Length: 580
Ligand code: GLY
Image 1 (tube, protein in one colour):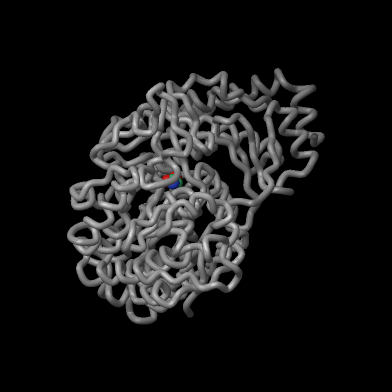
Image 2 (cartoon, protein in one colour):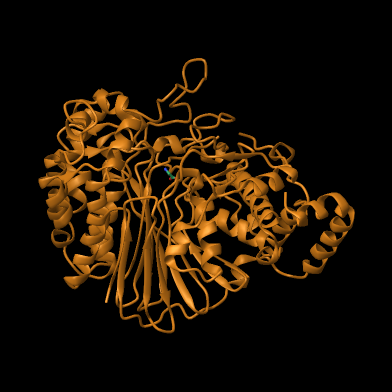
């Protein structure tokens, strides 16, 4: 434990508590209302460059090619999405969903394209329970029944029709080419396959496409997806109807139902993209625009940043700073578990959660000298879900249009179910709903009735595509990582605030707390022994993870020079490219 912490904890605890209370009172006049405080930065600067950062070099190249062909950031987003769907099938795909945070430079408008999956119309809250009311192991994770109605095909069409300059034929060409001709297997692909091998082997269509004679493909083996190429072609020529109506839709529904799923033709035809207002909040003059509900990302970040605004974390030593950040994470994730879900189905008290009164009560419950056991906070009535694989990309074009997009099929290779004949690997996003009150999901997240399954409802997400801005710089930021997405974006934002480069932001060490389980998990070697001791001395449980996590893609714009700095996380195999 560091000397400073020892002094604080052992010698000076009472005095410090008094000081802390004084500090809170001193701050009581300060407004924590996020919207009211949002700084009005000049959102746009004339940049002369364009950049794409994504989790796969072929997808980044597809985006760059589209910009070189005269497309804008939104066209590039279509190309990157579709190419990732082909070459990163374990992370996202046209059988999945996601959130696109857009900034249109001309009108200085921010909008979130909600392409989240929806629950089929015959789904109900007990969909994954047995007759005794227990959660059926794996039912919401593997197979046709775990799939929500996909949103990505509708998003591609929506982006092309409302925001792009090029045709879908142009923007989908690269993805179709990679699907038709195949892409080579790398080590990361092999790792993802090994993780889901049993499930992939259970579905012949999935096994035929993603495995080599029923097993993990060898390095360099080509994954060819001819049916997916045809499906993408259909979308490029017929738009929404090509996927959601007609022959393809009927064939997919028939195969889903034959395999225990509950999709209907009407569910597909009824799917709708929703344009939503993103969440806006601030932190010491920095403005954050992030995904809004049904992603919990923006709201949870708002709460965390509002709590942190009351503490001088930049001046604290490392253990104290991490302690305060963790206490803020704990409290915001608790609120996530209790209150958050699809705002079109439940009343989420967003205003209350970011109100002065609520934030002040959260701040005053933080003990600077000791962790607050999660069990001592007001219990959450009831569970929720989250996936570990997902993908993020960031794009800025030469006109200053921005896309920050996080997309997912949930678990690696989603449901591991390919609807016969379509080449479409379906998501298992239904696991992001709360399957049963009080039972944590595969990622240990708990939730409430706010996130219970209902027909047509969108499952709560942690995907947090964000755009963050100071008076000098703008960052486009996001990452995959299930329940850890929000805390990764938070740590990335704090790095950005500390004036770090894109490379430093994506490669900074990571740690996480999500209320339950009550433990700080951290990447290997990110905390040294003395830091672990100091945190344990403050009452925290700590857990060193076996592997690193996340795959952050960041572009930073220097407003004065208009220059771009882009980076793709060293933990993944992605690529960031800046066009001169
Ligand atoms: N399936 C990951 C998320 O939506 O948070």
